[in-house]
Image (cartoon, rainbow over all chains, first blue to last red; front, side):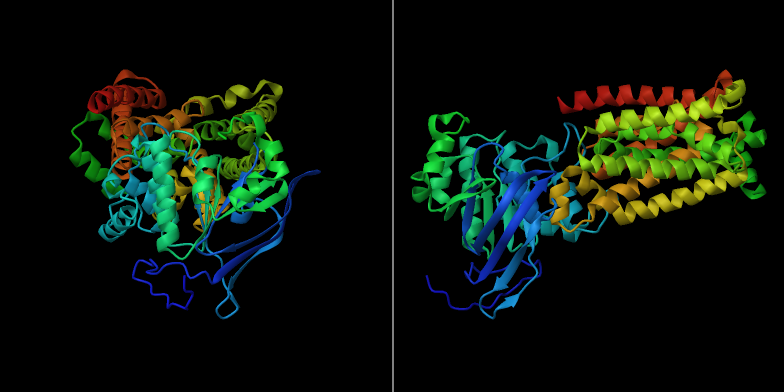
Length: 263
Length: 280
């Protein structure tokens, strides 16, 4: 693939009409997270390029979600996260997007997908009246993942897969530089997971962003990951899935399927 | 003032309009109930019902502290104490060492016990027992003015912050990734609830204030399918219950607060049936 510099053109809704250039890099340096005396994340260094899918794997309690939350800035941590444009060597402000594993929406909650979406991206008060412009914009964003028909449905009535697509659309409105995803673990069947990874591929192809996914499903990791990180408080190994799966620590962590992993 | 009284006397074909205290109570009801209807929507969505309940109970402590320091306007000490209480609870909650309901239980019982202990010195608690049930018929014009101000503040807050508040309730990490200052939003909402609960507790009563906050919104939730309907139904049900409750309590000779709550509860069950038959 040629890496010639491409002008970033933004349309009105901030959608970048170009594919990843591979020239934005994110350096995650010396991340440490402590809870009291206990070290939860120990000196994690990661180097991530746009257009690449980095997958974090590890046993239960390895600190995968903690690392994600540290990168999000939600958990106190030491170390730094730098975002650099390799084209002109300038540092930029890193915009981080996040797709949560679950949302706190009870059964029977009167919140339509429009309400949910507009709450995050618009100032137009959602309890007052529907803003036509915002409505159209949301519809357009949802259509990226073929979810535009869901806009008037109640968010609590969506299936796991449908909700996932809505959350993906929210996370990329506007498009972040780094997208963090906690892989959905419940409420999504095999087809739903297939679709989820299809959509991630789509994002990778069409948008200028880097992605970190926490995953439990090695079949998908093998198929889609560009770079795999085996985490257990610190990084035990990284590389392609083939490399990782030959690694001693990997075998030790996942042999026998004790942790309920599918291998 | 007389203008409002005159208008009410002309418009309302009831004998009780003659009494000024009834007119005052009517005005107060028409301010408090929609306000509670609006706030209730988010108290329910963000699962803060237990929180608002314990805030109500902390009224005793605020009152007690006020009497100790000889503050004339106990409203002030109650509001200040409730604000402190709300912020403290939020702060402890964020540390995530205990589950939310445990934290709230511990602090609300401690605070209520302190309040009751102080107020019951020398067997004088009966002086304050009216606070349990509340008495909307004793509200004065000045106090209605205060409620008006709170009403306006709430509306402004709602227009500015509602979207963020909703987002924080749905998923706090997602909200943070969208640059929403989640702590400020949570704290400001808690403070707003604290102020409103404290300023209306004398009229509604400690025992029932949470019911008035929760029931209309819960009823609205039964039949609404989006945020706009949710607010509309909640406010309408709240105002209707308030109005009906006041009028009924006049004719039945009962306390207003409980009567309002009973109407709201009836509305809840009606909407529950309507809502579940609609979804089938």
